Length: 194
Image 1: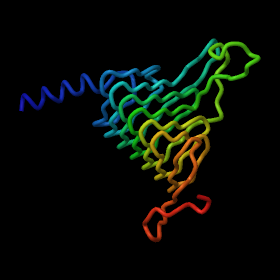
Image 2: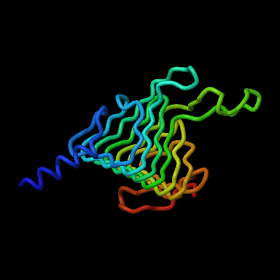
Image 3: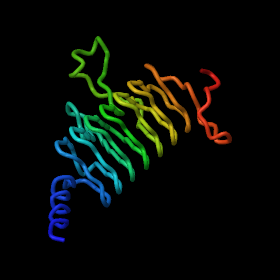
């Protein structure tokens, strides 16, 4: 009884960071980098792995931003993931982000006539929405303005530069749809354009 209570206390002390909205039984492993914690919400039973960066931006180089990160219930975020937002980034219930995944609604300006890249204002093509039950493979990247419909599958090291409808499987850089889930046969089948 005392040992169980002590374990629960240690778990809550170490893996339930203060200052963010955190659902029941959610945990964020150490070490971690959580910026602007009041702009992060994590749902119930969600696990965030070690060395993860969650960075909702409030400003950059004198320009204000309203970055928000919302992570749903029953989500798994693997170690070493980087999640950055200057506006809105949402991860739906039951999604899985494998290790070393990069998700951002933010990019540096790349105008060669506007000075050093790091001195240029941040840009965004829009918020990022990751649907329910989405699986994102090891080392993949999801870039600004992308919406992934429910139950999409993103292959290892894919770079997702555009949106895909629910039940799409994509691979490559830039990512392209190679399969779709057929709800009638309950199987992944080749995409019409693959």
